[in-house]
Image 1 (spheres, one colour):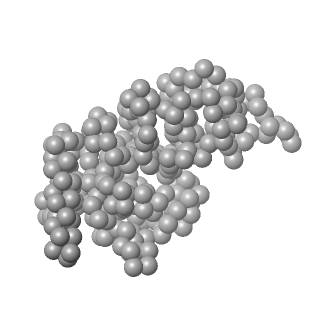
Image 2 (tube, helix red, strand yellow):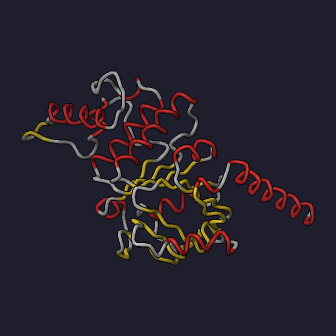
Image 3 (cartoon, one colour):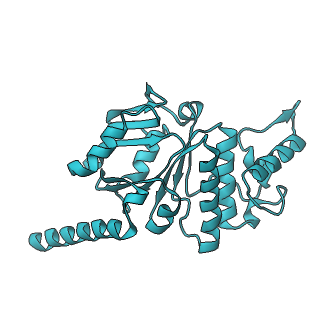
Length: 269
């Protein structure tokens, strides 16, 4: 990492407005190094874009932050307190939750049943369907998520609508204040992606949720993110406010990486 890329993150990480700080995080899987001395911060009500190629380390970092994996070195600080996250449930108890590409939705179940999946409301020994239906409808209306009915199976909805439901479930059922979105726009057309981009904007305006969003599409990330981190080979090589960078700059950095890799292969051939 260049000093220019590292200095802004290190300086800003000392501020009291950060809800999350990851300091000197590393992770190895046998001989494979996934993360190298990662320093990342997330400000209150901020949307941070985490960008990088496949295999750069983005998903590994997200899994560490949400308690799914332990780092080999480094520490996590959540709302000013150092924590050792040993499980996803522990992370959720601290207001951290993740929404992955596979969404963990059950296609055959209704929208409202998916909203309360593994957190079902009961009336005696029976499901309290009325309460779950009414609450799910209210939650989705509050977030501006437009679906035909909370009674329809999620299999009948578009990809953007299903992603929005998964995000709404994380926000409301976990009382989340740090939301991790792993490629929420993957394989979506422009219309479906717009649903999720609008939802991220709305969450940002609410002011009580901070978001890390993994993305491959630099243009889409620049639309909603306040700041950009670029990960290359397990290291954050760029940390800039969105207004201080551009898609062209990000593309130039990645193209230069490909050129160096090609040169190295040619020399070793």
